[in-house]
Length: 312
Length: 180
Image (cartoon, rainbow over all chains, first blue to last red; front, top):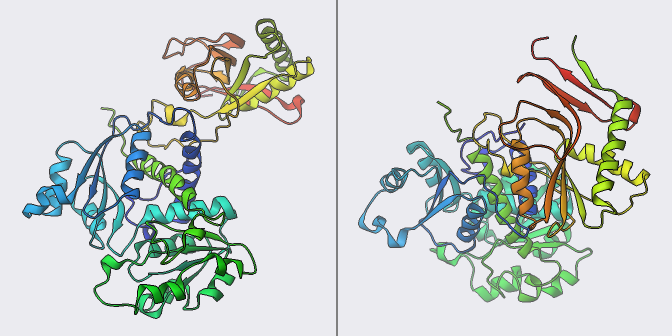
C-alpha cells in the first residue's frame, strides 16, 4: 500500500516522483468516477475543507470546490475581498478562527510566495497550496503533466516547451519541477526580459526563438502574459509580443511534426495564442480542465487519508 | 499443519460447474444479466466463471469489474492507505439483474460498499451475490450469498488464500492459521 511522503501539498519541490505517480494512479480512478452517471463518492463525508482565496481565481477555485463536493466533503469558501482581512486581520488569525470551527483542511491561494509554507508551520491543519504569488501552483503542474502523460505516454525523454511569461509564472516553476522529476526534457522560451536569471540552474534549456522551440518540442505549454504582476514594461507592446511569441495556426503548420498545445488559462486570445489554435485539435486545454478535477480529488483524497480518526 | 488446503483444483472445477448451472437455471440466456467482479480478487474468479459459462454454451455473458475503494467505510481508520484499483464498467446496469462476484465473503463490508458503488452506474432491477468461500459466523453486517461455493469456519486472524493460475490444475484455496 502506498502513501504520500508529505502531509501538505505546498509545492512540487517537496514531492517525490513516487508521490506524483501515486497521485496520477489515484486521479485515473477518479477520472472514471467523474464520468459515471452519479459522480460522487462518500470518502470525505466527515471532512470539512475551507477554500481561502486571497487572490482572484475562477477555474482553480471552481475545480477545487467541485473536487471536494465529488468527494462528499463539507466546503466553506472565503474570499479576501469580503472579509475581515480588509480590517487588518493577520493571515494566521484568520486561519485559526476558521480552524476553530473544526475545519480539517485548508486550500489557499495567496499573492505572497511562501504563504502556504508559512501557514503550514503556524496552524494545525492540512494545507494545499492553490497558488502562492509567483512561486508554485502544484495542482496545475500535476494536471498538466497528467494530461501530457495521457496523450504522450510516459514522459521520460519527452520534450516539453514552456513558452511565455516565465518570470511571473508559478505554473512555470511547478511545471519545471514536475516534468524534470518525471524525466522530461524542458525548454523555456520567452523574451529575455520575461526569463528569470539563473533559471538554467534548474536543469532546463532556455531559448528566445519561438519557431526553433516549437520544432524541438512534443508539446508546448503556452503561458499568459501576467499584466497584473508587471510593475515595469517588459516588452514594447502586446502587439509586438504576439508577433514574436504568439502561437498561430500558420506557425503550427510550418512545423515538421504535430505537437500538443496546453494552456493553464485564462487565455488572452490573440496574444499568446490565437483562437484558431486554442480551439484546434492540437489543443488539449479542455482535457486539462477535466483532469484538473480528477487530480484535485486525488490530492485531497490522499492527504485526507493521513488524517486518521482516533479509535479511542 | 500450515497451510491447510480447503479446495484443490478438482473441487474448484466441480464448484465452478455447479455455480454455472445454478446461474443458468435462474438467469436463462443472461440477456438481462450482468456479472460484476469485485476488485481485486473477485475479478479473477469472474474470469474462471465466465470461461465455464462459455464452455456450457452461454455466449451472451456481460461482465464488469468494480473497485469499491472510494466507498469503503474504513477510510481514515487505518494507518495503511486505501489504494484504488481500476474499474471497468462498460456495460449498463440500469434495470438489469446484477450478480456481484467475490472470492471470499468475510465481514460483509466490501459487499456493502459494492452495493453503494454499483448504484453510481444506475439502478439495477436486482442485485445478487455469488462467492466461492463463505467464512460463516464472521459477518459484521446482515449480508448473505445467493450462490455459494463452500462454507468454512475460520478464526478471526486466519487468512483464506485463493490462488488462480493460468493452468487450472494449479488452482487452489488454502487456509493460513493465525498461530500455526
